[in-house]
Image (cartoon, rainbow, N blue to C red; front, side):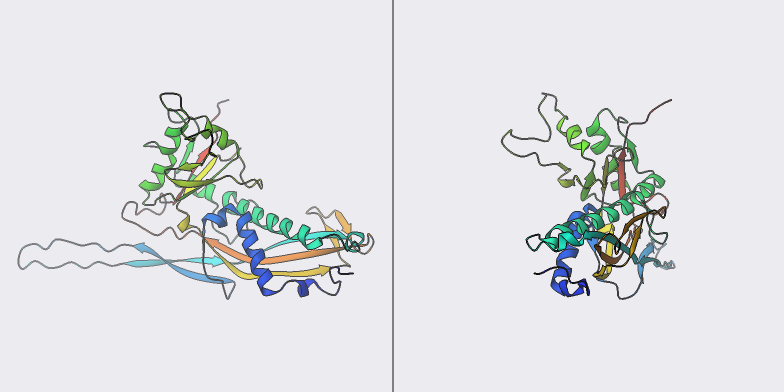
Length: 315
């Protein structure tokens, strides 16, 4: 009867299937869906030149005036590949059931776990490696690109008004081309009405509501990646969020290991409990180039993302 071979799971994962898994992880990750994938990395670290100084042109004073010189400069940013892994324990009794599609059950859970972990690291810095860039919420906050719910006259003003989140991105020289929102933002958007009391985000009652801001798609992750206590909506120029794979997913089947929690508590003793565990590992990196532009030349205040945060509370 076919089961996961205890001699090694790598025989189950050919190159084509590995690519499919990577695509599955991408679909599970809202950040990867909207972001830009760079070519695979051949080493742990990749240096990327980023424009940091723009040339300046000058008028010449009269017929014999001297022409002035200028310069253009580039800074460097690094993609640093870090390991992302997950272990899926499986009882041997389940493996013995030939009618049970083990891979069909394990694969989507692996994809979901990796997509969620990557999203939370990028959006909030949750368990993020030290070598990775500042997370989007911290970056937007540092650049002054956050708006608290209720700052404007209504939600529409908070997002699309003159001082709304999208305007903050535009003032930094970028154009928002995507949004990632908390699930409860759907209700807030559905509740928006025009002067006649008609919903702004629904043209007819027969069609599904198409959630867009300024013509760009809003994704509402259902994997728990968005913490509505910290942010309600991320907006930004996702061409500036670039990620790259160091290697495709590799697998190893464990049958004699002890699996521990982060505090050292033993969760599973595979040999003692008649279990095996499928370990999946991938390595990837991400970065925000954030090059200089004519609208904002100050790197401290220039950032291609903004966040709508929960309403401020007073003690």
